[in-house]
Image (cartoon, rainbow, N blue to C red):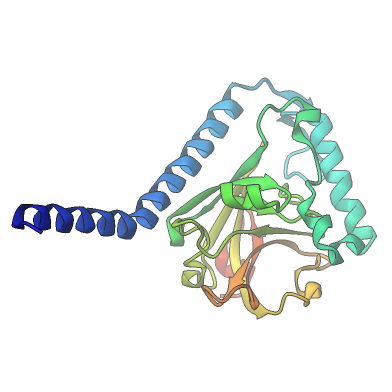
Length: 254
């Protein structure tokens, strides 16, 4: 083999190796940009939608302008029903993969229900209803048979995310979250603010750990643990709703 050919072969091998090494990073950037684009599109569409007056029973205001009032009422009723029934359907994996609602039935063209923002992780992800494989690949997913991400007393909305997938981080660095950190959910109607209250590591069969806790308004982030373990355990970040008028010290006794 001549020296020129050797150099060519080595150069090709180097480029192939570089491409293989770089692929996860590049793929991760593409996924991140796609999620950012999805969130931006959701915000733009929300701003252009007409509003309809509807009374919200648990709102801090007696009457507000709300998009899709029929969807709001149906989702509120759903949350009340699963609480009353003790979330009996949560024991079956197929139940929480199946979306609780088909947004298209209420006039929405996209499957995105909102987005999740976690400043401590520099993370923003679209939220989809139902923890299907596709929804988990596209962003964060609401577990059906848990409270829908609209807030309200006697609720615990469980949002699942991969602990890293296809080169993208998703919930990879969830262990960076600490007690008191802020997490927000922006849905079709409003932005809900939560603060991290508890962190737990459980086994997949410990379903009771993600049930609604009476009298509380919770958001639970869920992912596999430890990282790259094949899902032996689950890492839970349990967050409690706070309101603008709340003072952190008064709310938490600090």
